[in-house]
Length: 285
Image (cartoon, rainbow, N blue to C red):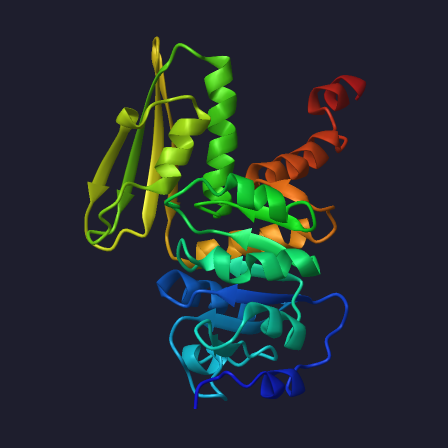
């Protein structure tokens, strides 16, 4: 029997401490499963449910599928048989993480926005501009969209923008490397190019083996070169980034956010911290 009986879901909802953030996950493909594994294992979070297109037995959980022992099991539900409004009423969550497809946000977006549930969308290559829709949802909840939500790639983006401002005349090329079966151009590479005011022609693509995702930005300058490179070793890196976003969105007001906004806020905290001057200590002694 498909997992479409919301009474069963509601009755099995655990009572959680207020410090634990409840997460709902949309999408259970390769990336979605890796993210689910991270959420299930991470202290301070509980995976309430996983919504996917296919049906599953009423008792099926992500924890069972992945072979992980966790308090939040991540009940599997089908987007074909369970309405997002009913799902969020039966099993409310603090945030929805989306690793599904371009049609995913249409399933949960309005329902999440109406309930003030944070939205962390990691879907790339939308067919149409989603900005107006994200802006509308951002009036009542926190919305973050990032085609590559890993912490490293977003730090690379911040660093690249800083270097671009320092050396605007540098020649800049972007190399993106992915697994052989990936046919489309990397949405992350396109975002990097756009953020640096570059055309997509600067992007070079390489497909080989099972590369999860590598991105490199080359700055060719007079007398020197600078290479900024990020490598995703496993898809669990997406889960780390998604939970960073969920945690740091939790106390923020409704609005549109970017991963670099959250990273820059952390960097400002670091910059504001007092740092001892070793030279001053030596002279004082």
